[in-house]
Length: 217
Image (cartoon, rainbow, N blue to C red):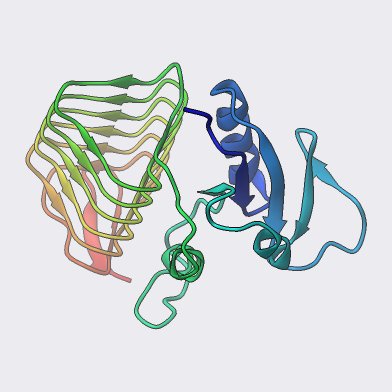
């Protein structure tokens, strides 16, 4: 099976990491799309940057797409986070976002990776986990057995989730945070970098400190 070239949606730091991942997988990256039309020529790791309209010069059967926007906490648009609203626009046109797994990542048995998932360099996802649509498990993050990572979540670099953790949609677990086994983090929550979460965190809340204490955002 011949793999199709890829267009990356986004042109910032996370997009650069996604391009590097794709190149390590041997994929051809055609262009990275900036939300604003570039005023001068620029590139990311040798990939040209163009405005979003450039994507529609390719049919949905000609290319795959990869989301290069990392943060899930953008202001909602019609009930979707900014990241998910962006993907929904392209999916409505028939474009597809395959799951991407870095060659150095470790994926256990019976793991489900939904569409658009990104598992980055050095990450570990242990057996029987579910990683929802467009979620990111970032560099060297560790997700232990039987976790459920909701749609649009971002598990930040170096974060650690114990077994059986549940993370609701569009939540961010910050760099180096630790979540004790069995904890549930609600939707649209923010866990600060370095926090130690030992109890449940409600929807739309923030968790800071060691141990982390939740507060409404």
